Image (cartoon, rainbow, N blue to C red; front, top):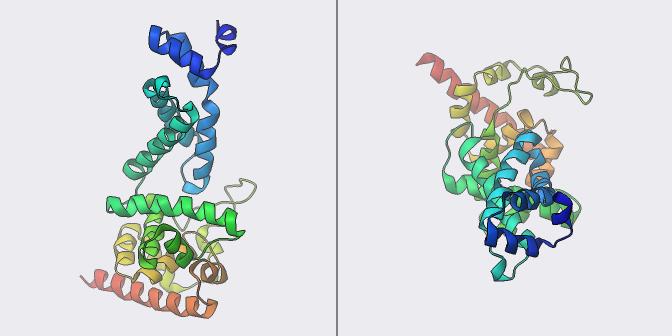
Length: 254
């Protein structure tokens, strides 16, 4: 039966599906276009969400697209399906994966920043600065910084989490890879308090701490990302750590 449907075009199959409701045609259309799910899901590989979950959520979007597509409108199915799949993934990120609750406008901007960064990286041949992202999205640089920072709230990694390129769970921890021991960083193990303490920092300092200690970027990489000097990053990082120590210390006294 599937060989029979394979001989027909996508539009012919949709006309048959709408006229008969044949479940075999529906299943064939879904299977024929599963590549669209992979195409969209690949844009979110760095989201921290397992690839299988991305495919699963994207597949829901594909099924919805097949059920809703109207062949009479004259548009190609892929033109309709890709935004539908992407929308399903965006809803998943917005509603299901945030470690702490943040305003919806910031969640949505965070996803827009992610997509703009990928596009600008391809265009520029390098990672864009925050000012370039802000210009691309017609928002302020502060808004971009806030959106980038809150994207880390999907799931703050433990400083004791281990990883290595060959998948060895006995590899160095995040704390081991963060640089020389700093007694102030012992405070960073208290995740619930840390989330609150980070919110007390100015946006740029907050971004620097997140990029340095949760995204494991060097000071120079952070400087390139933000568009400032490495020395300025070092000063802001030191100031932010002092503030975190003071804020968290007050919490102990309370």
